Length: 102
Image (cartoon, rainbow, N blue to C red; front, top):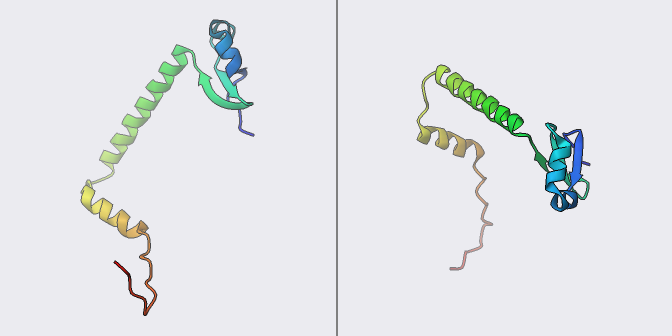
């Protein structure tokens, strides 16, 4: 069973029936929207959503800065060549004595 990451939950049916009531009851809390007792979505108050975006933006800016500060850039072509070499699928082995038909 999946973990519900909210103290309040509501079924999709209940949300469809009365979205205004669900939002009013939630107040400033996060609400898990359940479909067959599994989280299908989360309703977030605007201030929580804005805080998440701000935090993600700050974390992304920090990660970019750390990448810039970590040293010289690697050309994209070289990086993809290295990745393709490292993770390439092995070539299928042809059985000896068998010819491919066109």
